[in-house]
Length: 504
Image (cartoon, rainbow, N blue to C red):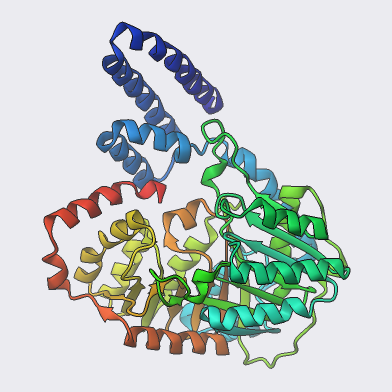
């Protein structure tokens, strides 16, 4: 039924546009347009209600229509229509689950595994096992790569040493100095017989030149844009973006995290200065999980199935039982349970001593916001690290609208002081950590394709803790009283942008 209501709505839009062209001549444009938008908005609100969205999303959309009647109407056409989401991605979800089950199997949780977790985190461990298609690996090596200065030399070295295949998946790829250096390596490898597949997001990398793409294709690199958008007013693929950053080399080495491919991620942008970000190197069993995520995304876009041993036999790293665990969790519109949001929530409510969160885009939903405030009011040391300069002003000011209620609950809010903070990290009790592509915002939770690594008492967790301490040292804690004295104009801007949170 919902599909037919949508068809009726967009038929009405087409008829309305034709009628508007007539009334312009008759001089009744404003009145007729207002009636047209009002009727359309009523239909849209009805659709949102019967979609049974989260109440906060429904209310936010209604507020958007009330505050921005015309703009809200067009925003909904571009970003709000989720009626095809299940139909489009249910098939991918089913195929992914079948593939992961076939390759990874249904590994059960053992008492030995549980004993590696603190008693209060066993619930989180069980949840992660249930939500993740991939198992927790206790035979993987990880290493934190702090900023582009550590990430890019590591991936360039790994790419140059590739012997069988290179698989890359990125949200943003730039045609600049570092982008060109990576391109030349991929071309050289493809020409020498290495299989190279490169999946990029069609919206995130919309500025990538045709010349760049053609050079790759001409050399034999398999190159594909994820979810290209041609007619956004008819389809809503623009709303579901592939925000993942994955590299797998020969099925043995893997990289994932927050850094895209571009010179600004090396601190070469004058506006941002230092680009503070975090990536993760992985070797061993957990690489297979990253590989599976890539292969299923590649299959979705190209219909090429690559579930073969050549790609799924990583080098095994024999670790002692005290080395900790690693689990790769994929999330997106093709998953049932909003995996990463629920795992963030579980991390927060499991905390006994501390919760440290770094996020460049902090627009939490009510669940996460409440969990953070309750944790702080219960005596947990809750800290939030955010940028002090915006790269997206709407998100920046919307984010700041949450600060007063956070600080009223005792949460310490820090603004990073050495450039732009882009890390997406959560560390609980200095022993459980998440690092990856998912921001602490509603777009990452509900719309984007994301991937995070969850680390259980690993050396990498300790490195993240040390990096956090250094970041706090060079950051400024926001004074609650000073923040309350900001101008009424800024408060109004923050409140207006917060209304747009369903879009952000």
